[in-house]
Structures are given as structure tokens and as C-alpha cells.
Length: 358
Image (tube, rainbow, N blue to C red; front, side, top):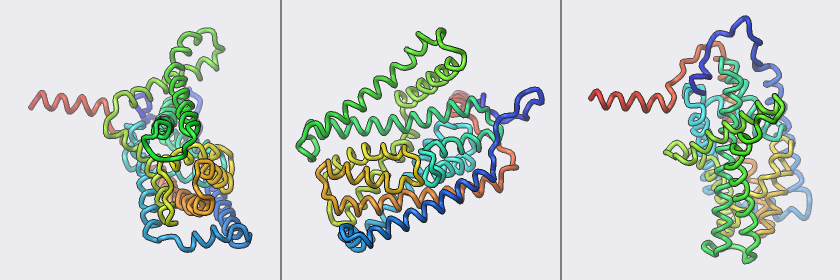
């Protein structure tokens, strides 16, 4: 949020902005959590009942509990990373309120089967409900998505190049490193060139498309500003991804099997593309995708399956539980007024003036 997203009484002459349908949101979250529990029970039943999966169940049963505790702690850090990233982008949001909105997004992202769209929309509606302008919320939400996506792409490029040049040990097939790196580099090129393309053809586009393209270009420019002028706050977006990858590493360690780090990172990054499929918690879809990619990157199937099942349980239930509590608190305090903070730019100007006076 910036000054243009300030909370103000709605004008009687303007169309009312969309507000959060609390009952519908509650039903979606509750239904998602129930579906999540049912699907997890089915997966556990299959692991125990299907003869070919007995080895996976046995491996899970004998996993080192110390590493599981570490994995849970790392997932908590990943959630906090997202909170910091959210507060960096929505820099005028009060810290407590912004933290609860960010955690609510994580809960809906984990439990509601909307392929990630549910988490973004619920956060936007929670902000609009408190008076933020819809267009500004849309632009800032796009920046947050692009920022976290840029960290994903950068990690993919880095890991791919490290594997391709043999700097880190991993599979010997060079294509397993250079193809992911090439895809990530291509994504960055498109990302950086899109605003220039929009500026060139904006006037020729229809009005509605022009608005969308203009908003997209502005979001990309703001994201570039975050990436090209980094400070400590960028660590939130990095921690959101890297701590989650570390959860997977800890789950492998819990099985007693430690595959090459770069293989885990690349398989994780590519396998997570399946998360876009709208299934509650991506149960079955994400697991199968991750396990398949781990096998392609030379990791043994049984420990890969065991580590993935435990990782997915942690990566679902920690944000779902924490975020549900945050969402319930937000609903109970929705009538309380918000006091916006000065933006980061305004805070820097205030500090500069204080130094001049001193």
C-alpha cells in the first residue's frame, strides 16, 4: 500500500468496491481443511495398504524425529519469510494486520483448491475491506507475486548453472542443468522486456486490455526496483523459498539418505509446477510430480517418496493451521480502524531530516 491506498470513507457517488464475503470465505477455508484431512487420510491408507508402497511406509515410520522437528522449524521460518515479503510490498500496512493477512493467504493457498488464486484473492479482499483502493491492491499483489516468482527463477538459474558447470555434484547429464537454467533466463528476459513492449503498443490496444497492460508494466517496474536495489527486506522473499526447500532437505536427512543438494533444488523447483493444478493442497498431484522429478535427477524412489510425503504434510498443515488462526482473528477485529504506517520512502526521508537537524 502507498499513499494512494490510504483508507478513506467511501464516496456515495462512487461504485462500492468489492468486499469480503465472510460466510463464503469461511465455508471455503473450512471445506478446504476438511478435504485436506480426507485426502491425507486416503494417502496414508494407500501407503499402508498397497504392497508396493510398504517400503515407503516403513521408511516414514523410521525417520529421525530430530530432523522432523528441524523441518517444522524451517517451515515456520518460510511462513515468516512470506510475511516479511508481504510487509515489504504493502509497506504502509500495520505490521500486525499485514502479518495476519499474509498468513491468511498462506492458509487459503494450502487448503483451498484454486491453484493459488484463492490466496491472492483473499488477501486482496481483506485489504479492500479495510479501505484500500482495489487498483492499488491489484498492482501491489502483482508485485508480490512477481517478486517471489523472480526468486524462484533466480534459484532455478543458479542451481542449473552450478550443476551444468560441475561446481556442485549431481547427475552427469548436462541437459538436467542447462535446460532449467535456460528456461529461467528466458523468463527473466521476457520479464525485463515486457514494460518496453507495453509502452510501444499500449496506444493500439483496446481500452480494457490497455488498463491491464499498464497495470502489468507498472508492477514489473516496481518489482525491478526491489530486485535492482535490494536491502535486508528482500531476505523475506528469499527465506520464503529457500527455507521451504530446506524443509525438503531436512526430510531427506530424516530418512538417512542425503542426495546431492543441487538435485533436490532443481527437482523441487520443476516438480512444484504441478501446484498450479486446482486440487486441495495439491495432494497426490504435487507428490507425484516431485517424486517423478527426484527420480529423473537420480534420487532413489523410496526415500524420495517418504521425504516428499512428510515434507508435503509439514508444508500444508503448518501454514494452514497458523493462517487459519490469523484469518479468524482478522474476522473478529474487522471493525477496528487501521492506522497506516509511513511508507519506506517516507521513513527514509524522516530519518534524513532528523539527521540534518541533529
